[in-house]
Length: 239
Image (tube, rainbow, N blue to C red; front, side, top):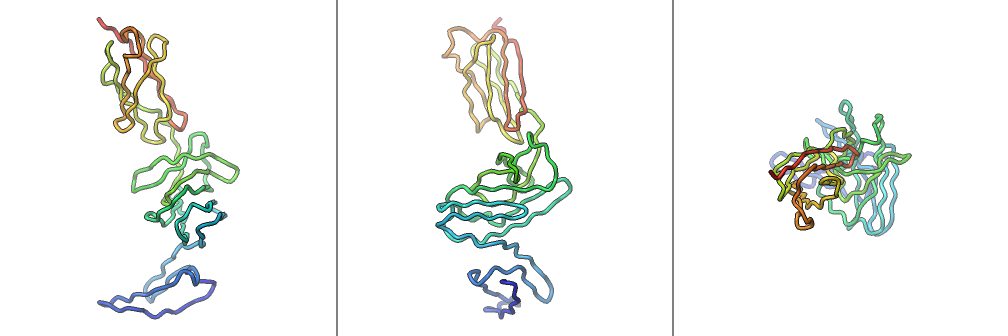
């Protein structure tokens, strides 16, 4: 911490384990060294609460406003690469944050910017965060300082028909990467009102808005947040 080395004495010895305390207000340690191991702490800086704070780094830019934090944040971060994946890891999974933080990731690899967005990483699962590309990198807003990566999405949404009848239309729509952004349905060229249940990924026609049955050419266009689109066409016949 502070470019100096400190030798600490344990405050507690219990069952062959030594326990140490360090006051982070006295400085942020770069590493912890024992006789057997060396651990990097990944501390970068101290972020005060109750005031705007901007942090610029070769891998990330962060912007906090005066109401972002409940208390002081001792920022910990690590950038790693695994093959064609870059990971931007903040060590604050359980840290409560009051307001959104502006996060800009600065990747070293080259991406198709039109198809690439930020995702939070939980095990093998990716959760869409979105973002917009700037001169500095990919910028997005979040209340979770967790592990992030960049991923490209080229796959269009899926459309699975459940019921295609003249009295009701039900389809399931899904997109496993960037998520559903919009949808539009038509019957014989006329726009058709559909009710979307996001939890069940279910689209259902609202026939009470029509004065006739749902006969003819049914067209459904579904787009995801990466600009991929799926068009589903089916002829519905009441006979």
